[in-house]
Amino acid sequence: MDESYFSLSAEDRLAALQVAATESGRGGHLLEKDVMVVWAIDGLFSSDVGEHLVFKGGTSLSKGYGVIERFSEDVDVTYDVRQIIPELAKGEMPLPQTTSQATKWREAIDAKLATWVKDVALPILQKHAEKTGAQVILRVEGTDLFVDYDPVASGYGYVPPIVKIEFGARSTGEPAEVKEIVCDAAEYIEGVAFPTAKPRVMLPKRTFWEKATAVHVIGQQSLKDEHVSRHWHDLVRLDDAGYADEAFADRQIAKDVAEFKSKFFRAKDRAGNQIDYMAAVSGKLQLVPTDPETLKALAADYKKMAEDGILLDDAEEFETLLARCKDLEKRANANQG
Image: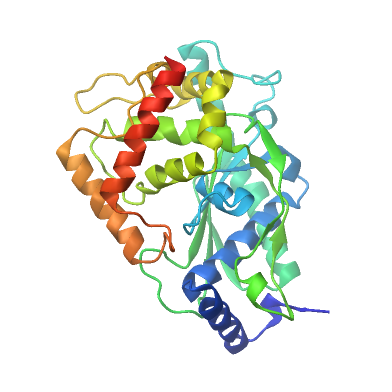
């Protein structure tokens, strides 16, 4: 029987990661964090509440579908809105019908989700740590759960030795399907049992519209946060895998995402005007920012990702990425207009 990764000494874990790093060409620190990402996903989705969770975002594209090669740092998880506010959210695809209803939903969710993360999700991972022998420190900040681990590999910079699990509970997370995920290092090491998981994963065609609408908004605002250029990269990789065309063909999903974000993620542009999500899925999607300062900040963020190895061997020039997104924007608008 293979020995569990977490039962190895620090020296042996480092040795295993170094072998995998040499064989794969990936940084040992990225492989180490990937182990902890899969470990966390396994703990959550193998629990009693796992059937009500959906794994989404860039990490789900990488781990669930192999669509992107870039290293995905954190974990986005949706807890079914029908579970957290059953008195309000009902039906197959529940959505508030008015702005006032949406406000009521948000207030109810905000009042309950942080408590759920602290009282339910945190204990689940605490028990998972005890069961697997993983040496971690778990902490909660609002609706985010952090997994701090003592790294054995070196090279941490843009990527910290912390797994951040961001919980949301404003939708069902559907459509989704169960996918088996494994650690990137596993194929290079014999005799070691790395974590595996079987989460319910959001379908890529919905993830496309989630990211496209996010990019549409970010590009019209002053760029405040780092780590956002990944969305542009992910859209191009989704296109490469054929999921962009699949998303264009499913107009209902585009509409669902726009309606959902219009209710829960209202945003304004730099001039203070309300951003129209429905326009983004109806022929007016904007994937390439026009503001010079936004483009400059985006280019700098992309450069940092590339320099730290986050994009692995998948880092085209920034100008090439923008050109691809411009083409994607034109095709999206032609299909949705």
